Amino acid sequence: DVLGKYWSCDDCRDELHNKFLAQSLQNNGFNPREKRLLSYFSQGLTTRDIGKRLGISHVSVVKLMQKIRVKSRKHLDKI
Image 1 (cartoon, rainbow, N blue to C red):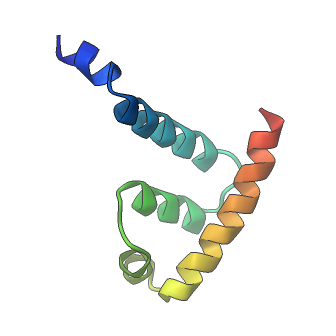
Image 2 (cartoon, rainbow, N blue to C red):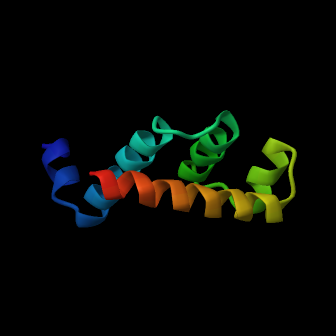
Image 3 (cartoon, one colour):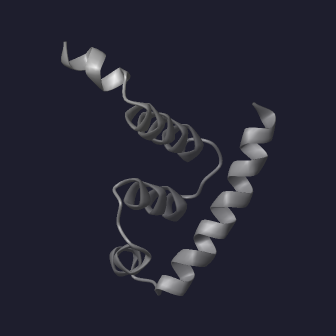
């Protein structure tokens, strides 16, 4: 069956895990801009594309991602 094939793929499981992790983190202490950035990032957009959508520079996107990583580490330490 198709679902069985999907779950047998290591890359597919990793991708699904990363999406679930992003969704979990998104709901734990992130401001609306950080949540939008995570959403765009999970869609595979580049930093420049994300910056255009958020109305900020790609450098600001990189800095926001750094803040998100710090917050994520704090959240993951609690798990």
